[in-house]
Length: 478
Image 1 (cartoon, helix red, strand yellow):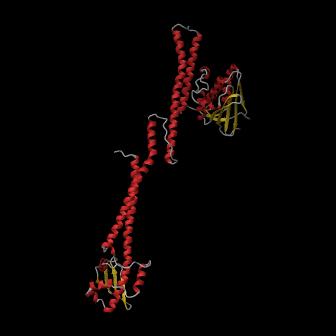
Image 2: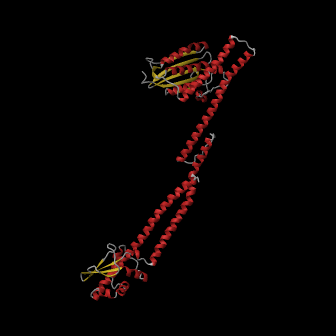
Image 3: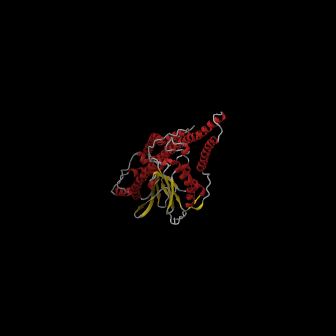
């Protein structure tokens, strides 16, 4: 049989409560018995004082202990029931009580009979004159004296085994009341433990249900956060995890849709061109072959970008890092694209304001060339003819900053952060022939992160977009 966490918590609370009550019950039972016996022992001290005084008086009147041996029971009853003839007994009563006056001695037949059975009288040589034999150490004997000499000893057996029916009934009632109180506490704990366990487990049950829904693919599930303790933190962490999974699922679906959309366009063009050639609608001319080659190159670039991006995501993209001068790959990349910028009518300016023009970074030269090439190609495609692109490099402290600032058209500020998302385009109607697949900046971000740097997009003073790259340098800038 499967036991739920609610019942487990309920039984745990109930077991802990029962254990605590059991310990308390045993302690209280021992305390009641011990306290009652201590009270009886206090009364016994008073009895011993009174009987000892009477025995000393009777010894003096009779001239010895023969009266005890001749009529022991009659003399014992007389000594036990005889009232004190002076105030000395009352004074001794106060001394024996130690805490003020004690209640008067009960003179019921049961009490007198119990006292009579417990009395032990020894002579001066400690030979037993009256009473049962007692084990050594069980009885404290009080010396009896007459005219300054010891004439005997008087003792009382412990009252533990000589309790009267009234005393036994009193102890029984007290223990019964203690049992009823313990049972009442256990019942009350059981009544409150189950609702408490159910309340404590309710958030866990909600998280368990939501986890089951999450495992089945319902990523929009959320759990309410009703506390600020560990369970509340668990609920917040679950909601954050569910939100992350929901975003990842949306990104995956968008990724598949974007890839299929990007591949469908050049494939549709290729299919149309080839079918036209097969049906004789178009002739095989250099222009036709060039058109087919252009679409194949577009597919090749898209597949290559996807491959590079997947390697970066998996962490399997190789980086051969070395100490190199950041100025060199930046100038080399700008030199390669300079003719393209001139052909489109865009002014390309490099501004490297360094004293000795050496910025040493620990990086992969090939990946930096790919990074700068993607950024230059991106500006070449999106900057209007007649505009400009300014590439600047500055170094301060332990970081080098590279800015790519192009002219119009610009991008809305709320869309700048999304420029690094895969397949994202500011304008959905932009021509794919000039706009690309939207993977260049995503690849740039992965390259920068692999070099422990940052890349961000900002509005350009020239009206376009400024891409800022910050890379750590090896040592301080000179």
